[in-house]
Length: 313
Image (cartoon, rainbow, N blue to C red):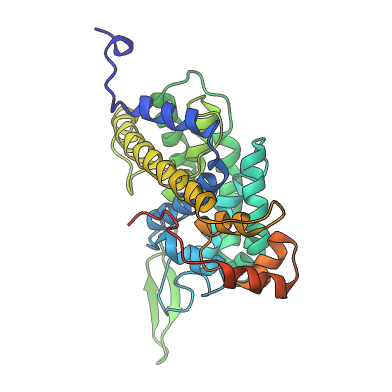
């Protein structure tokens, strides 16, 4: 029996289709895509060897902390600020008006370009040209719309990220002795991970870029065929989590409307929706986003009772 005639309810492609379809009409598509962007960035940071949580990004965006791990004295291979900036750059030319609106909203609160320049200037110099090369190659048309094509493209992109053999670095110790150290190796699979959601869109799997669909493992398997199975398993897991996330967001948004008696011109419901994605927004950010005075922003924040923001544990 063919796959078309024997599709399980937990089939990964079916789950992805359900998620993509619901995002076409959901009242919370904007909130979901904004949160999906944070979840995707957190996954990318893990692939790059800089593990963080979504809440770390939310704290940074809400101005409660510097970029994650920036002040912890850790010898990280790359800054989170640079990863976040490159992930957002993927969506800059997206034709999706809702996705573009959520990106504009985020950049009204946090200028990722300035943050990356401040905290990851060397990272941008090191990875920026390679990212542009990968991005252009990832956008090429696919010969066929299947996961194997994406897996084969991933292996082709991996060949672009392979570092050339480099001679050992010569350094001088404090006491004048010459030392020969091996060249520094950096994980680069995350650069391909940035492009995976866009490749899924370009191949026709989704009708818009869904930023959380990173899918890649820390290390590639031996062949495109093996990677296809890995992608399929990850796709089902992420799509199912996305459906649960969308359900929770829709319930939270419904409670916002039910629990608040406000005038038609009130900005409280809009602020409550923003807080679903960016909890802890400061008055200055609220004033910019809602186009109110700083005093009005403080009053709005003071009037907001604690609400369930729909976050997953």
